[in-house]
Length: 105
Image (cartoon, rainbow, N blue to C red; front, side, top):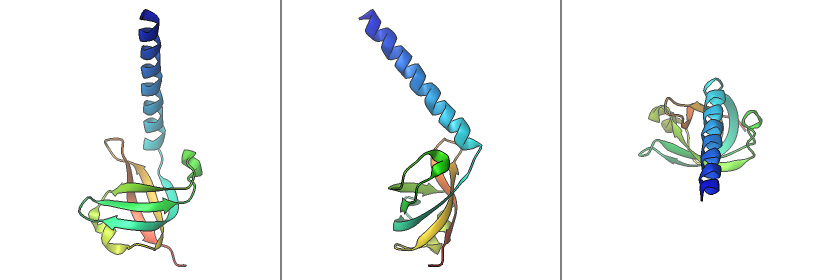
């Protein structure tokens, strides 16, 4: 049982360090990303986007829901539009969109 507790403690410490490292790296950088909007939800200040790979984050293309820094950003976009957006961390460590613009197709 002692061995299990030691391994669990080591795992949790490593996980916390990994998350801290990701937050530190992300906090220092904003990422320019392109994608296509699936849906917009003004009530929850969120947007669902199928984004292209984000190489600077080591992230493959996928569909994700993101919060936006300012709900007014959502009034400028709609489902089906191709967009370029600036992604980073807010003060609480959540991925958030700070800017979004429609890309002419």
